[in-house]
Structures are given as C-alpha cells and as structure tokens.
Image (cartoon, rainbow, N blue to C red; front, side, top):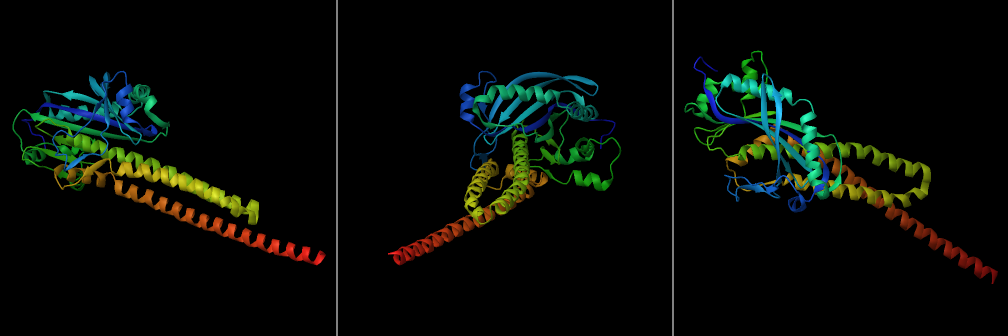
Length: 367
C-alpha cells in the first residue's frame, strides 16, 4: 500500500493493446517487401535465449506514428505501432511513456487510458492504416468483429531502489490491476496478485485476465511480447470456435436435407458433403496448429513459465480443447458420410449387376 512517502515512477509506460482478426492468413515476407511506410521489421525476443523460447514465424512490426489521447485528466501523446502475425491477427499498440509521476498518478493514468480507449475511434483509425499497408499480403481478408484488449503497465525505474517484495508491500498493485476505486476485500486482492513472478530480486510480473503489471529495470520488452502472443492465440481460437459453432448446425442441416429430399439417391450427395467437411477441417486444423506453435518453448525458463501462466490465465487450453472437440465431431461425420457414399456405390454396383443378369436372361429367352 502507498504511504505518505509515495514512490515515484521515474520511467516506464502504459501500453494498451487491441487485437483483431483480419484475414485467414498474412504473407509476412510480402508485407516486408511491399509496405511502403511503417518501417516493417521482424520482431524477436531481446533477452530470451533462442533455444529456450522463440517465435516460430516472427511477426512484422510497423510504426504508425503518434496519436493524441484524452486519458482522464491528461492529454497524452501515444506511440502507435502494430504487429502482423502470419495466422491473420493484427495487434495495435498505443503506448504512453511515463516519467516522474507518483504511484497514485500512474494508477490514475492507467485507468484514464483504459477509459479513453474503451470506444473504437482510435483503434479503427489505426487498423484502417494497417489494412492499407498489408492489403496485398492478406489471404482471404475478413472483418470478423472478433477482438481482444489487454493493458500492460510497466515500470522501468522508481525514484528509489525497490525489490519485488517491497513493491507489493508498499504499493497498491491490486488497485492498478482491478481498475476499482472502492476498497477490495482481502480475498479479491489475493486473487488478483496470485499469478506473480520474479526472476531477479528487482523485477516483478503480475498477470490478470485483462491487465498486467511489470517491473523491468533492464528495459526489455520480452514479457509484454509474450503476453501479446498469448492474447493473439486466444483471439484466433475464439474466432475458430465461433466458426465451428456456426458450421456444425449447417453441416447437420445439409445432411438432413440431402436425406429427406433425395431419399436413397441422397447417398450420392454424401460424397460432396464429405469433401466440404474435409476441406473445412483441414483449413481450421492448419490454422490452429500455426496458432498453437506461435511460440516455440523448449526449456522451462522464466519466460516460458510466464507464457504458460498467461495461457492458463486467458483460458487458452480450454478454448483449444473446445476447437479440437468440434473438429473431432466433424472428422467423425466426414468418416460416416464417406462410409455412406462407399456403401451407396457398392449398392448401385450390385443393382447394375443384377440388371445385367436379368437382361441377359430376357435376351436368352427371346432368342
């Protein structure tokens, strides 16, 4: 909890992220070649060892200049950047640098920025700029409406040396993470601070569903980068879960229509339905695997632990299981339709043989 001698955030920043699903896939190499502005560059984790954790396909970062925002009692300038992922996700990041603010002012700025960006004007403008830059590289562009928000409050230095335990003891971190003005219960406070991590004595990360607090004296952005990837995975799994939710009823309806309208002949249409299902399953499976492998983790190091904690916090494994469960239903249906189509072909072949035998008998009797 803050005291009368309140620590001052000497340097840091507040990053507000909004993630969008904009296409089935994005050709990142083409983005690098053809983006005329934005200084496209590949992103890499700055401190992590590549053999421990790395991007499978590093996203492309774009610079979009600056934007003026009204955040509570402040009018602030935000650096606007974007990152483009090969599985069709675009992240827009509005980062407000902070220097020389008391802890209370820092918390108020976080809340003000969250409130100011609750609407969509700033995000829509930035997203349109990104779409214009990457349009030639988008594969099957779409406007799905599926979005994710996340906010990262980072302190690079206080005006005094504070270890991780002192930060939690002296500052109301739960207040920053919750965005609540009214006092929180002890249980709520403990729940908000439950997922906290430190590697050195002077760094700290606390994760929640929609906000994170990071103390990083070395100034690298690896933690924020890892949290962004976890949010991107959540976004894509939510999108494909919705796609499959819509696809399953349509699949059952097509099967029912084929059966009731065409009777025995409907089995000949099962092969076409099976091919459609196989195509959809293959498409979703490919994208889901790319999303699942967005970060390659080979050793249980600090960032890997943070990454797994973020996935757990965002319930990514649950969304992944839901998508796989629906894919399994579609695969089983595909197999059943294929069996029906094979059985139909065998039945028609048997009838053809019987018909030929009858014709032969009739011709023999006539002769």
